Amino acid sequence: MTDNVSVVLLQCYSPSILQQFMPVTVGADGNCFFCAVSLALYGTEKVHAQLRLLSVIEALLSLSYAI
Image (cartoon, rainbow, N blue to C red; front, side, top):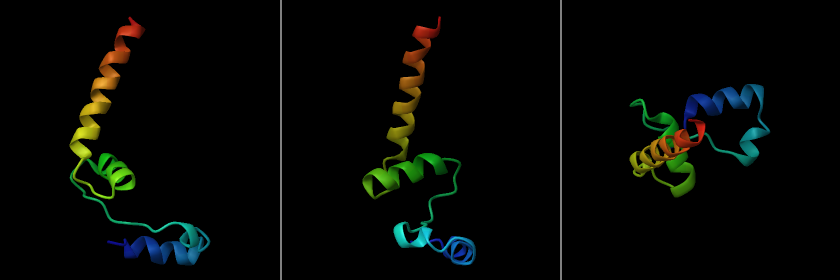
């Protein structure tokens, strides 16, 4: 699912980017960063919740080093 608005903007201002990359649409439910990472890594947005959980666990574990 290509993001057509992004394609038009890139064609106007930076068409060389479109030779290597394709802008895609991700869910707009507040988890867009994790949806985008999930889509990039796994080809689907379905694992965004697991990625978010793993990020929280990693952040909480690193707090023990800061204290």
